[in-house]
Image (tube, rainbow, N blue to C red):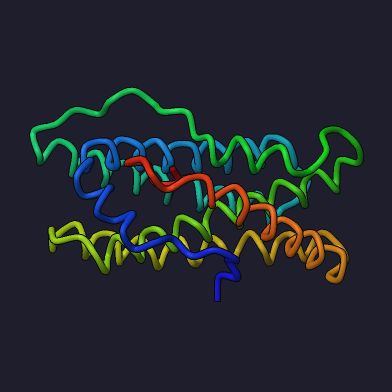
Length: 193
């Protein structure tokens, strides 16, 4: 369903479980950045009512997820650590050229967002199926469903604002690139790392 070209090795969940404080902190910041991205899309494209409506709802939902993750951090007697640089997202953001047509830049951003959500969904599935901590396993199962909805929303929006065939080709090219990126990650206790 997600179209990812390279699945996460289930052993990544073992790395994550051994570094659960790192995973939770990284996850909290992923949710915060997703909310910030939604707000940034509103600011950048206020003339698109469907986009503004969907991004407003998304920003609220992502901050709700941030709060849920933060609550789990506090329940474990931990504190939210410092934000980590997300090498995965940084590399994805280099795929499409900078500048150029404003509408095309929107499609590029929506596709990158769709891919981040798809990979997050897939990683949450791996966590939900492999964590020994049952509460966290169930938590990640619930979030996996949300991420799948976000992925499809972003992809649908990209197809709304561009020609379907062109958008689908860009999507396939981005998926191929992402497989190269993710093949060099997965050894750290980070959601995308």
